[in-house]
Image (cartoon, rainbow, N blue to C red; front, side, top):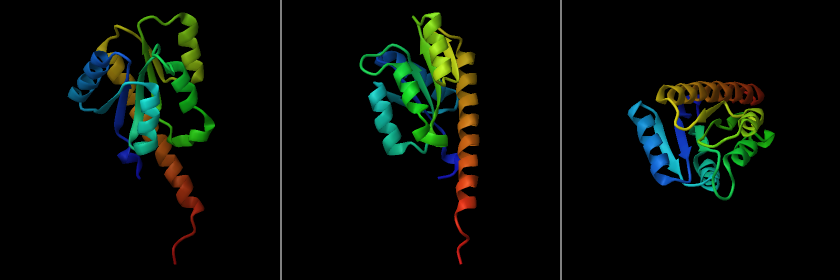
Length: 149
């Protein structure tokens, strides 16, 4: 799979209407989107179709695994360069939680309600970063493979 296949944005929020509204807004701006109802569903999507998923937009506070737990899991070195970029959003995050999200590897932390341009800019930046990392991974893997012949 090439880095150009890395185009999908997954929006996860335990409030389905919010997740759907964000995904539809991003789709109207030209992004390819999917909605997940939980962090666990994001992980299942990544297992099934991780090569296409470039950015995960996650709420902080969700039942089960929260957004911070998801960020930490996705930033585990075992996921390597193919891990998606993460944009965290929250209506109730403390300064300590925002700092923890950034330290765990969130590309951006947005307060709800956020300016739409801020979200679109963070997602666009995440797509660029994910594609660049995956292109570097492809080049590195290609240099390890012996030439056919």
